[in-house]
Length: 157
Image (tube, rainbow, N blue to C red):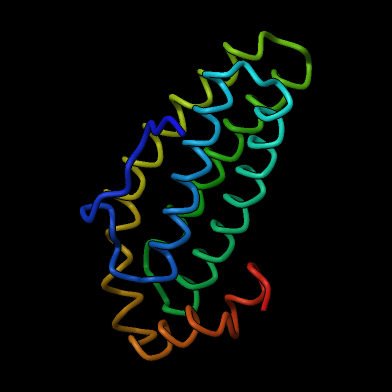
């Protein structure tokens, strides 16, 4: 598979479950890139749908975790997520309306790469210490291993 993005340690927020989710989003972006290279419209449509669904679940999970940790910048973080969801929804709509697949997928891919890298390195890095301190390493590891509590609401048991 042709890779566009590679996960690097500087993208780690220090919360295993979040890092795993971010890695999965990187995988989806790479799958979108691969589908674009091959001009596979069906694969592009499938990857976009899965990527959007997964990202929405990730955002909900992340916001729930920040809320439980009483993260003071939760409201602005949610706003950033909302703006991103709106923008990606516009790409989905363009795709569904029949706009050139290569153009829409390329525009979306560029937006995803830029946004994800900036969002992780800025906003997500900021909440890491607060969440780790508030929820504790044991609870975060337990949630990651067992997908219990608030994690199971978003990613199943």
